[in-house]
Structure formats: structure tokens, C-alpha cells
Length: 275
Ligand SMILES: NC(=O)c1ccc[n+]([C@@H]2O[C@H](COP(=O)([O-])OP(=O)(O)OC[C@H]3O[C@@H](n4cnc5c(N)ncnc54)[C@H](O)[C@@H]3O)[C@@H](O)[C@H]2O)c1
Image 1 (cartoon, helix red, strand yellow):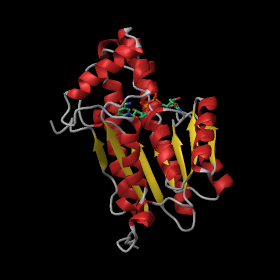
Image 2: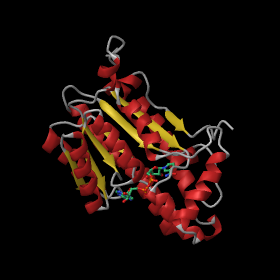
Image 3: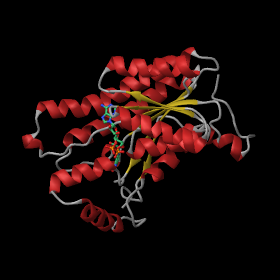
Image 4: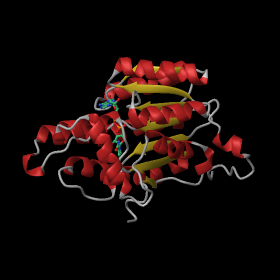
């Protein structure tokens, strides 16, 4: 059966995620948290999986308070298969189905490749790539088994999935692989009504980026924000991203607005790659 034709729906019906259940990994803060908020605002029940358990609980509480329907913070380590299986199980047990899974958790340690340790290389691949494969697999197993079947899987890649960057070979390799994973799963699971889409943000101002830049340069936060403004000013659209810039595109991917899209990665980069 071909994917549903939604041409007759109103814009409100197309954007609505009422009755849908979504998981967002790494959503205690940063881009994941912004995505969880937009999905909840559109009507989805959201499970927030994160290593930071108090952070996930606080994120869920604030979403429930702001949007008036359940959100749940859940302990998650995407590098561990059992942990991902448990989260997918929980979504179905607590809320009856699983419609949207966002593989967002990721790390981006930088080091000159001549000094790159195997341990850190493996950790980056385990979290960014293997974690995305495991999340997608566990989500798809449940999306195929449910009635009505199907769903949307979103992989947060990066502009580093499309170009090289000095000192970031592990990260760049993992994100190129996430773009490939997205293509491959989109092709494989289309017949099951599962759409798989990627997002490729440019630099986005998040706690993780600020921590990494502070560690790398020893510079304090106010100065980092100033530096980010300078970098952003060189882009065609004149600024770097905010988490919500990415979350709005994630909502487009998760909703019926993007019904005929699968396997592609949407570049959200203020024009950086076109430049
Ligand atoms: N911020 C950027 O500039 C930028 C640009 C392009 C792509 N991205 C991608 O966006 C995603 C989110 O980045 P961010 O900047 O919001 O990061 P962040 O560090 O601010 O937040 C990441 C969250 O993921 C959680 N996390 C880390 N490892 C985990 C694990 N093993 N299991 C579960 N949760 C884990 C952290 O606890 C944290 O809450 C990443 O995949 C990153 O590669 C970020």
C-alpha cells in the first residue's frame, strides 16, 4: 500500500500530533529539549530519555506544566542496547503505542586526529551512530507491530555529516554515517509506512557546545557568546542556530506536512553549506 495521501487535510490537521507518542533521546537540554517541547505543543505525549535523570525529569515536568498533557523523564544511555529496549518498551506499556522516535543524543569531543584515542573514537561512534541504529531498530519493531502501523524516525545529524572539519574526525565520520543510515532505513522501511528523516544543523547555541568551547579554549561563557555572534555573522542568514530553529524543522518532519519525504536529511544551516 502506498503512503497515505493527506492533500485534503487542513493545515491544523497536518501539523497536529494529537494522540501520538514520541520519544526524544538526549532531551534533558539543548536541541533535544527544544524538539520535545515543539512535539508536545503539537499534541504528542513525549518521553524524554537522557543520561541526566534529574534533568530529564525537570524537562518533562516543565513540558507537562506548559502543555497540559503527560510527559515522562526516563533514564537512558543510548550506548547500551538494553537501555534503549527498555525505553521503547516503556513508551508502549505506558501509552499504548510509539509514533515518533528522535535520535538526538550525541557527543562532539574534538581532538587532533594524530592524538585521537581509540576509546574516545569508539565512544563517539557508540553514542552517535550505534545509538541511532539501536533507537531506530527498536522504534521500527514497535511501529510495524502496532495498529495502525507506521511512524516517523528522525536522526539528528549535522552539517558535519556533509563536510570535513579539522580535529573532529570521529564526530564527522559518525554524522556522515548517520546520513547514510537515514537513507538506508528510509528505503528499507518505506513499505512499513515508516518515514526516516535526518536533520543537519549548523552550529547551535546549546549547553553542550558552550561546555566544549569553554574546555577547548578556557574562555568564559559571555566571551563564547560573543565569538558565536561573530561566526554567525559570516553566514548568509547572519546568525548561528537556536535550539528552536532545529525543533521547528523536526516538527515538520514528524508531522503529516512531510508525508512524501523519507531517506533525506534536511539541512538547517543558515546557508552555510551553500556558501
Ligand atoms: N549544538 C550544535 O551546534 C549542533 C550542531 C549540529 C548537530 N548537533 C547535534 O545535535 C544533538 C544535540 O546536541 P546539543 O548541542 O543539544 O547537545 P547538549 O550536549 O547540549 O545536549 C545533549 C544531551 O544528550 C544527553 N546525552 C549525552 N550522551 C547520552 C547518552 N549516551 N545517552 C543518553 N543521553 C545522552 C546529555 O545528557 C544532554 O542532555 C547531537 O546529536 C549533536 O551532535 C548539535
